[in-house]
Image (cartoon, rainbow, N blue to C red; front, top):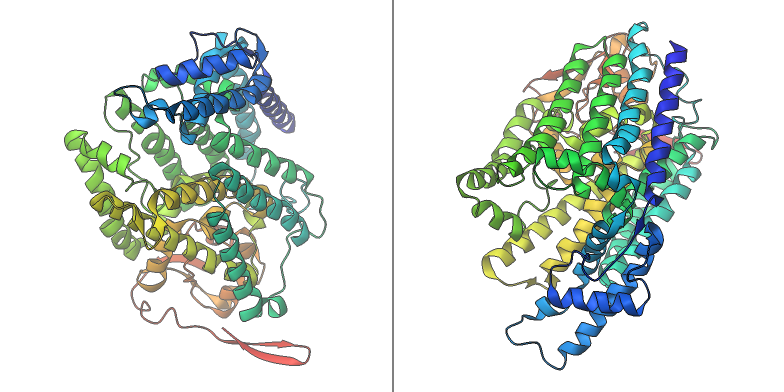
Length: 595
């Protein structure tokens, strides 16, 4: 069995290497007729600029071509801007003539796609099999032998493995802080606006002040580290690779043109359209959830709840979130993910989406009403009966990826009080930001006024989409699985998780009950809690777990050797469950009363 698993690892690594090397395969040749830019004025200016800069009618490697192309488009935009000062052509609107900043990235991607030539363009199915095919086969060869092992949870050296052991606090910060600073600085250069980066830094400073000084976290909540030494080199490599992938996906899609081309035949067979970066991402997402879901089934096959829950997230991601929207497009209907809910689906109330649904007839109207009713009535009603687990652990795509691909890293979730304090401020801050942004967008939609109290709706939604929709949920939320655990986004950033958590904490029948007399303090429950809850401390006191962050995954119950923990629904304690438990904290020379 070990030999089969080693073969599986070899196949997966081979597929990953081919996938990475594909970024530099092939070349580009831009001519006067193949740019793919349909606007006559824009195309003429770009071709003229390309000729002046010496990249027209020349074979150039893909990466070098992309680096030279942006100055070409910038030069074309500057020329059209200068010409526009002398007057626009008759009957031509301003932005039909000038190239807006938002068009530069779009034109870069379009031109790279249209001018690409190489082995991937000639043999997309071959590269699909050499990457996705080998990766799937390798993953299954590694996972399937696990079904022959004895049932039950075994730690199996998770804190000694260089992939899953995690880092000391300083190592985590050395990874986290440069990434966050880089994202904010890139946002400044991307939008040429200093206001929102400064607001972001200011909010971060206020939160740090509240956590460290007002709540005296520096003194009375020491950091708990999963690793005594910084030796998780495979985890660091995996984290860097994931962060790099998301950076390219969100902000430099021209560089992944070969990846997109590779999956275009599959996209055309499903929706009738060539693939976009979002089709590539959805396909990868679904395949990972399915393959790693099988791994999840092998690990937790002793627990029926985990088996059913895993099948659920596999179904909702592959069928509802990926295949169904593509089929709807094939039928000339709006692309729509029926399980995506505002405020996680933060652009649901954007003008383009509302207009698209309204203009799509009866089905579009139903989709619009469905999304509104699910947010206003469905979420509180279902959460009242089942807690936030119905969505976060059974339906959500982010949760599905966290539970499957992220399961090997769930033990890295920080259980310290300091982390919990950060969590409360940040996640509810994101929820407030989502509400404010949506209010501004709807105000603009119904009144036509774009600015309220000095806040411009377009600027707010652009920065929210950049920082939260891309930077937090993708770059940090998934890229930090191997460093900070698998629920970084769900725990610290997801506004829907915050919304669900408030209902679960104050008005829900769901809670995890404990039988403290049976607890042997083994710590399995806390080790495997992906949401940073010190479950053992609740179990030792026989106290029900009603933390708003709990996603009801039930893994703490599945790994408990004594049956101490149980997922239940009840109404008897709804009005009293949130009373603060007070504790005395004793340090050298000081006794304090803590909440």
